[in-house]
Length: 377
Image (tube, rainbow, N blue to C red; front, side):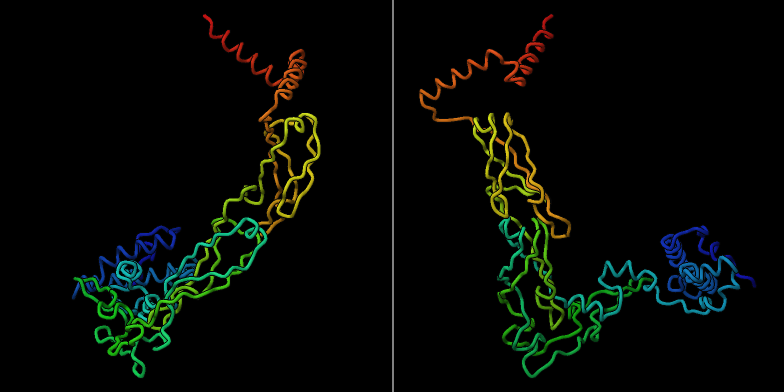
């Protein structure tokens, strides 16, 4: 008897993706599986046909051979027709594994449940420390392996025994109608072991609370939000399991002069009215020391001056950014009578040619005048 086309068996198109194949297979497997159709030889035969088609069409090499030569290209390698129906839960293992904590073998589940938790530590740094890098010692409260029982949780001289409920697997199989699923053992909570005589120091937990000091190397260029992973420095694992990791989260303190934006730094430079009008050389700070900034005459508030290469070299590589200095012209305060009189005399000389000396002011007032004239009926 000739076999049906595998694509026809699954009800899938010839260009169907593996995910689409899997979806079609699940639908048909649920319909024809022997667990759901006891003593139905026809359903069992259809299930084997579906299983064989799925095994061929989800294997890249077998599918290529089938597309080129048909059944003749895979008859010797498919091996699906003679395969047993398998357990129903295996078909949907990835689905029920997520729900019940199953999936993979029992050992893998126990390893995951015994692994220590990851920890997070927020480390505040000054801008200079973040930009140039530093070494910092931190103290982290955590759970460490009990020295008395060496993490086993059992009293010294004794050892844990296999769980009597799951036999050490950490999981138990449950039958719900035609579904057969796995779930974490309620007795040992997935550990696979039981402790008859618990350790007096850790009370059977295998871990004790302790603050440990760690030296953290901060690479140059880190910024707020960056984190440094210290492998194995998190909480100790339960009953000798692997320790988790410690994530050091960087938070850079606000600086009283500079504001960082990626690789660039910004700072505000206040200058006097006279320096802004006449111009001159100013000393401005950088993270590497003071540098001179030449300010031309007639400089206005808000003018940006760029000092190239005086910014930050990012931690992920690349050259340093720039320092951008924003000029802020400071209005004189606490003037004497003589100073005020001098300014009035000076202002009088400017008013004679206000269009020339204050073009922005003149243009603004002209705009206001035009605005109100347009509003007249």
